[in-house]
Image (cartoon, rainbow, N blue to C red; front, side, top):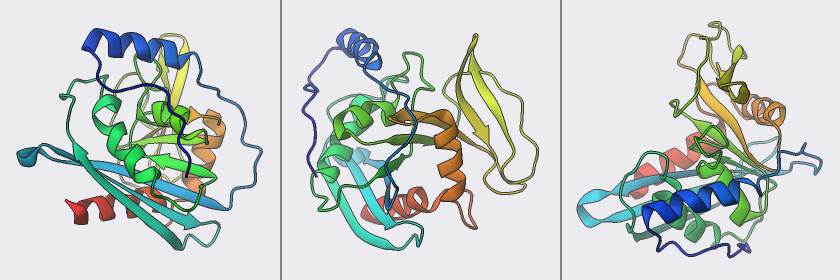
Length: 221
């Protein structure tokens, strides 16, 4: 698939933070209008001893949720672990994998934050600007924001708020298991993000695209 060339990755930490603030202004939280026939899960892992970042993308048909394509990439790690700047560590591998896709997915579900980020540009939002497609942040843990624990039943959710702004939802995707932290990345709304996360969740905590991408990148590692 074609990737938008937004910027290079050789940045100082201060420049990376400034770039996040600038790019966040380009994020669009608009309702999904295109029919969704293909969905992709994106996950990233690290081979720290060898200084590598690994990424996997699994594309599924919808509503069948059958795998139709996978792609992976291994790249050199060039950015250290700094909370709030993780997309500069993970995105290069994710984009290298995306470039190998023959399919252009209608929707991406990404293991990471969308706008639930101090500068409103987590990995899912950042990648969304490169991909030019709707992206949803599906994180296993909270980066920022306050919330009340949702009820134990599948589908229960409460807002994730930062000050007066709602930046995501804390969503129970399976009864009795830990919730996920869902936020829009780009070209979708929070309502879309929550609805599609539930649409794509079957018997497990993780939605199918994210679950399959996680297994793929774990095997790659």
